[in-house]
Amino acid sequence: MEAFDSLSGNEFDLEFIKQMTAHHKGAVIMAKEALNKAEHSEIKSFAQSIINVQETEIQKMQEWQKAWSK
Image (cartoon, rainbow, N blue to C red; front, side, top):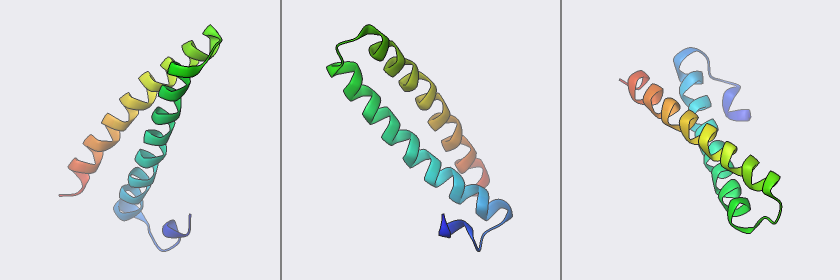
């Protein structure tokens, strides 16, 4: 979070996207593990939902990063 202290505007947005993308990728890794190893269907369903949502958000953030880094 200290990385945000001195940033504002576009620089803040790009750092936010960078850190949130890594965070989301971690969530996808965890959810894939749960999808493969969980016993209960509720966890498997929840894990698949996480994967779907997080991967969509990662793609959107990567598009923004590309557009705003010019």
